[in-house]
Figure (cartoon, rainbow, N blue to C red):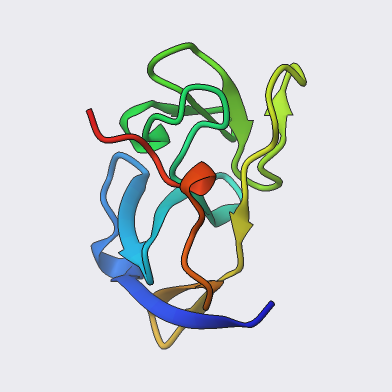
Length: 116
């Protein structure tokens, strides 16, 4: 599957709360900063289909604000193994700009968060 790199935010402008979001080619992307750096994941809980970006990031994982499911930012793995893992996107920093690669194909309905 082919993918394209998109600029998200300048590293110097990254929010102090450790997360930012972007919609890139239809994909809802959450970029989180943890101890080892920045990581990009699909901004959709695989259980409740809610935006993970409204949850908090602690100890390298983001928590779903609806049901408490936790997902590792580095791997997308659901901690506790209760729900499907989430998609992880490649991330790089080029000339101080955080960039994320998303598939060229539009996301399927099961990859999109619900809008409340």
